[in-house]
Image 1 (cartoon, rainbow, N blue to C red):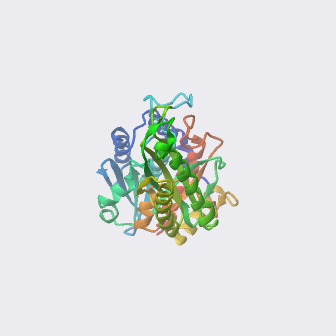
Image 2 (cartoon, rainbow, N blue to C red):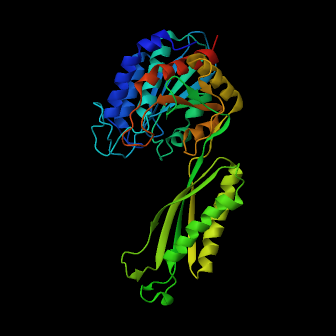
Length: 387
């Protein structure tokens, strides 16, 4: 089943929705305009249920098939944008300086709306499809908020599927893998406390700048010398703040960064060793280290059976040889991971072609990918819920 003819005919309409959303980006949970736009479309399509305000500003639409009762499967799209000043130069660029759809969530939302319209028109399946439009993927854990609002049980969702565009992956192709496809993302802050002094009298100080420098280097040894090279671990110190004058050794320095892992045991190990190494290195220099470690999004873990199913659907849409079923995992994070902890399912990447990378100010979603994304959703629904 290649790209569906009716879906191909819908491309311009879906692209129009996408560009309208692109012009009007909103951040985190403050997606009131986008949520209202989505809810209005779902009601116009004739969805059997449209409920807003789930997880603060999320929207769920239920589309019942015409072939009788059956299970409910959920398809999720994210709605929020990023705090970035857009430089794409496209006619539909953001109208709000400092906010931009630089990750393609406008495309994700529009494609799922396209699928909802098609499925509402045809209803050629048994059971129901829940189309899930989620706020606050970009750091706000909107998926978790929707779960905590009881979404899974309220709508009796049995399986969940997600999709994200992938720049550099050719349009018309997909990539996916079983198991961990995106990393767990944790953050840390380390405060190194020493003793300040005049810079001309360093012997009177316990220099937290020097100590912090040694901590940064020591943390990299946790990756290079204590972790199995086949078990991915990234430890990045992304900011260092301390002191204001060039002739004063400060009393303390703060380091902040992120830890990315693909396995629970690696995550536990990294958290333990980061604290131990930072504290011990500080003590070796006569200073102290206070470590605050915060766990963020968990690993996005694709379930075996559902991944095999997604590969089969994507292969029918894209054609043989256009689906990488053993793609390398991404060390970025994704809060669809929370939904996959609650229900079996799979997260797939859709080719976005030769565009700027995600979270780049020049990025714009490639509308040529729309027919493939919508056809994937429709085919997945009609196959999973075949009468």
